[in-house]
Image 1 (cartoon, rainbow, N blue to C red):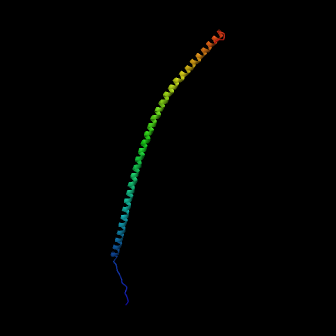
Image 2: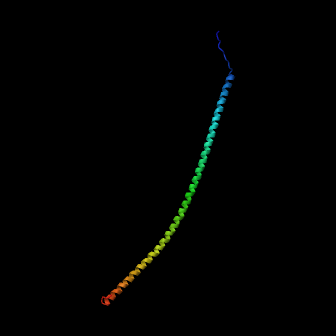
Length: 127
């Protein structure tokens, strides 16, 4: 009982068709993986775009608030400057008035001293 080896023969066409089917299956798997990756990338891109849009909105709001504060500060500084100008004018007027009042008081005091001196001199030192 000897066994004879079995010989299997395949045609080249059959071998090529098997190889082609395997390549087609691999290509299909790669295509599916690429499609999945594309979907994930699209989702990430969409999320990223949404976050950038939200950040842009926040930055715009902050910029508007800052601009409003700067405008308000500019108005307040202008008002303060106007008030300071008015105060300067009032102080200048008061300074002149005070000088005049002091000179008037000095003149009155001098006159009083002269009167007391004359009185003391002419009334024999009895003021």
